[in-house]
Amino acid sequence: MNNIKKLCVTLCLFILLVFLASCSEPSPLYGTWADNRGNTFSFFTDNTFNARISAEDYTGNFILLMNVLTLNCTNIEFRIVTEWDIRGNILYLDWKTTESNAMTLSLFKISN
Image 1 (cartoon, one colour):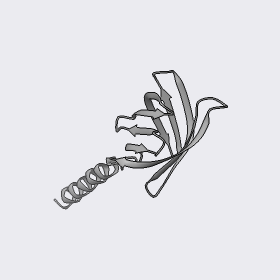
Image 2: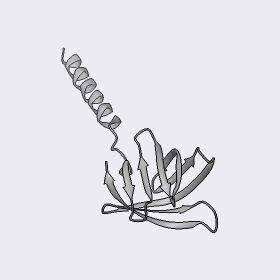
Image 3: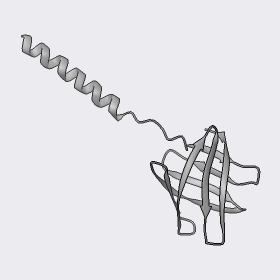
Image 4: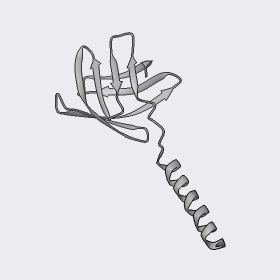
């Protein structure tokens, strides 16, 4: 009987550990970001995004790996790989569509 009790306690602890390990923290990128030049980014929980940069619209999906953000723009079949950083409530990233068209964006979070 004592072994069954130990087995049940061990099994309950294992199930609790698996449950807690499966709960992941949402990315701080989720939400809408904007600056005072009209640039906006919206990141969604299904790993898609919408952006309006320099009066051009971009849509697609994104991949996060630590501080590297890969944006796969499906409407123009283009990929941007950049580092990102959030300090306070400001998202910093580089937007580079061509060698001559590169800008550093500083975007403020405007909604979750």
